[in-house]
Length: 98
Image (cartoon, rainbow, N blue to C red; front, top):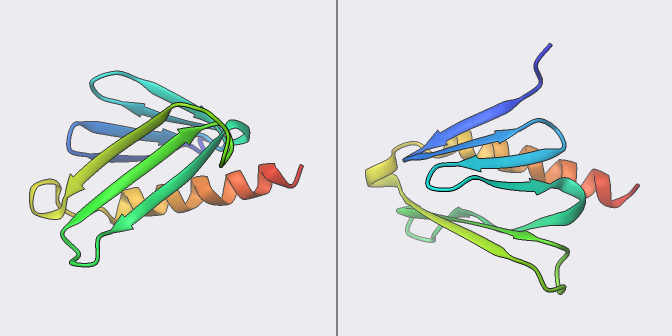
C-alpha cells in the first residue's frame, strides 16, 4: 500500500510519504518532519495568491528557508496543495510530541 500524497502546482511536484516532504522542480528540496516547520500555507486576504514557506529546523532556530508563491489565476486550484500541507503540519505536530 502506498501512503504517499502528492500535489502538483505550476512546475512543482510536492510529495509526502509521512516522514519526508519533497519538492521537485527547479531543484529538489527535502524536509524531514522532525526538522522542519511551515510558516505560511494559505491564500492571501484577496484570495488571489498563496505563499508556501517551509523552513529547515525549528521555529526560532537558524535554518534554510524555502518560499514558493503561486497565483490562483495562473496555477489554478490549490486545494490539493493545501490538503497535502495540512497533512504535513499534522505529522510535524505528531513528531514534536515524540
